[in-house]
Amino acid sequence: MPLCRILCAAPILSCLICAALCREFQISDLGCFVDGTNGVRDVGGMKNIGLTRIGSSEVSQIYDSINCGQMTREMTREVCSSACALGGFQFAALQAAYWCHCGNSYGSQGAAPYWECSDTCSGNWGQNCGGMWRNRVLRLSYT
Image (tube, rainbow, N blue to C red; front, side):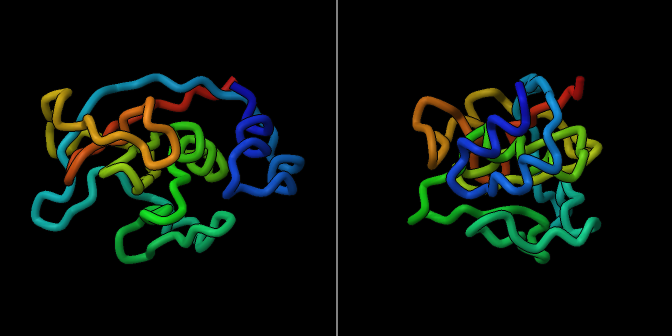
């Protein structure tokens, strides 16, 4: 899926970024995985590249994630994967309807049952965006 198309369609991402970083990628759902065991993130990496904001959303340095918040209703699989693609990450992880994590590895804390990742995305109620301390992990395959 073209990154520039996703970025321009997503309300929290700028088309200026789109023009500079247009690249195509496919999204594959890898399943549900445990996060936060002993305070350790399973998928993390945004703070390592110095990303602090994406549109109106702040990148949390504490949680190493993007939180679109309950009032903005913007998180979708496309928004999260597009944000992760900006950093060239291999994986996007959605959690608890609003959170997005990016990284180059996943699964260090084990798999979780599929139903534990059934929270609906705040920006698209037809999509699942993880659960409480559960990541819905997506692979980004660049073309």
